[in-house]
Image 1 (tube, rainbow, N blue to C red):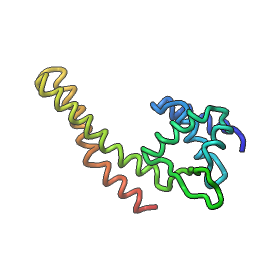
Image 2: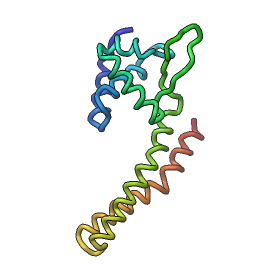
Image 3: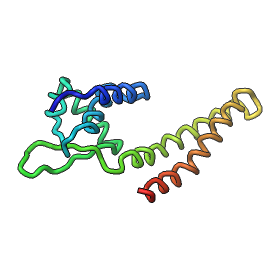
Length: 148
């Protein structure tokens, strides 16, 4: 297995610019761009020439958010990982909690500033936006899953 291709590195950079930790983004790209069904942590570390600790941390993070999964590999004692089927919809489903937290933060801000103040009006727009996402995101994800 070779290191990430240019498109893989570009994707990792894009994910990093979007807020993902650099090594997590590179590990995710490795799992997305591999031609193999699964990879071990050691194979990822060797391919990306990064420490096993960095890979372990990234794998835990990616597993926690539901983008990747551990899979059994008959005849192997090492853990194998793969990009999870339906991972993007799962990730967006998990974002509902973030939407809820952001909406609550806006509500708390409005309570302290008053809705008729300049800050309150900005916070009301924030609350309204996250209310909209809260209502629309589940249906959007359901439509995506249904058309697949």
